[in-house]
Image (cartoon, rainbow, N blue to C red; front, side):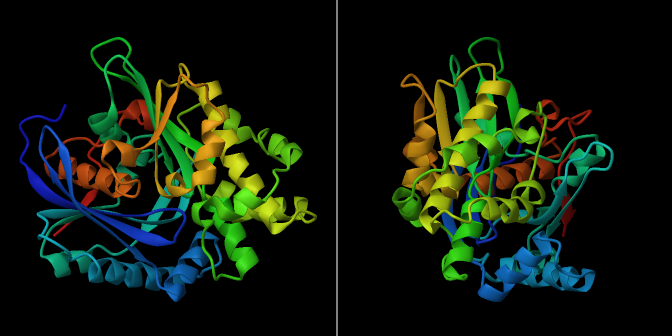
Length: 370
């Protein structure tokens, strides 16, 4: 799959649906391996974070979104220069709109790449999702190529589950055949509802439930979780993808009215349990089997209460670990995935897996700015 291509040093840049920070991963990529050389994260400044949340909530004007596109590009560029110079950059950008509807799919990621080109004197690959959408796909998930390259294991069914704002899984069933059977899709919410609750209850002074401290103090409202699990998205067959439009502010506002008699700790505990239960429900309904190994990544993998809730959904025969135990920091996977996608694009190779996105064919993912 990845053969006879030039080794390069690539900077991957990712900011996810939580809209809290930017992760940078400087990787050395060859046709045999992806090696992480340096990882760093930078929090969004308060005003930019608020503006991006407004854009993702459909509360910003076109003028404001245009300004954000450039402000964010400048922000990415300011913090991109650490360690050795990259040969090129893979910039995911900040998703503020994602509509996977089959009749009129659309997506947009903010962050003008020209500022990175200027700052690093290197080509930048961005706008990764549109080519897959144009080919009939949903533009997501795209980290599957990286998961397969780094984590697939012959003889096992391995799942990699990213717990960002949204939860997404890559299933790699390699118990038979020359190549693993690949399936990938978004499960539903991961941290997005928890983060919204934390900002609500602390009036913006806390953006997340650090290590699950609030969830550990609360009691789960099981009847509500059971009702939410009847949401049609969980029962929809892959390929499928989702975002804040479905499990962000609109869902949160309704859920908060339903939980008005619960304590703030109960609310966070209930959202945490909802993430774990919806993850397991998707696996039960859509995967070929319960995985032999489940690898958790993303910010939610640093939340010990989230890990306990997820582990409780699986039998002892499933090994549940974080990517950290396999040598990959939990925040490194997504930016490293877009570093690999940029490397593929610069070498003229497709970056999507049509069987996971629903596209009619494999396509070159990303547009190059020089």
